[in-house]
Length: 196
Image (cartoon, rainbow, N blue to C red; front, side, top):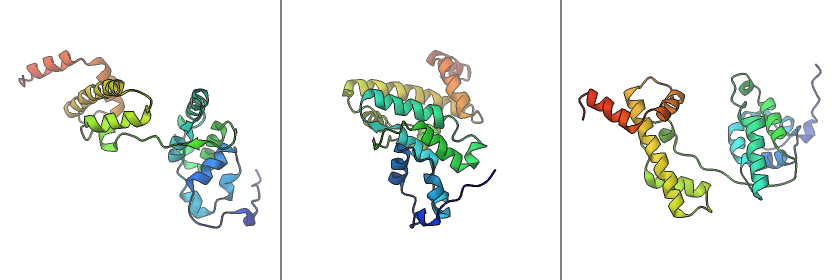
């Protein structure tokens, strides 16, 4: 297969990968944009960050839903696959495929829960969880945010317990086990161990 020639005069001059230029190119469905990056810029290309930014836009509910579902369908599910992750241009093409090509959008960053909390190495703090959900759901009232945060805290506490009891268990397995283990199961287990 012949390589496509890239006009060297068309390459970007600076060495920084500019996130917002990449998002603008994705909004235009510019499949050739990655080829215009120089080697340094290509090394600074982080598709995982682009997935987060591309999937979250300000606009109508329908357009927001489209972006979220499209990015998940075309890119998010496969982006970090062990084979695909070795081919950044393919990752760029997948991100372009996810964009509807409807012109510039206002993309926003969705915060994430602290890494140590999400990997069960640190307990969650109720205030941090409330703040997190308040940023994700800015139009939801405080009572509902509290209810969501309380549910998260209850699940997280159970996951932390299971991670302590089964230190070699994978996070995915803890997620599944947490759905089946009840608080009364934990209490019975602790009584059997002589802890209660």
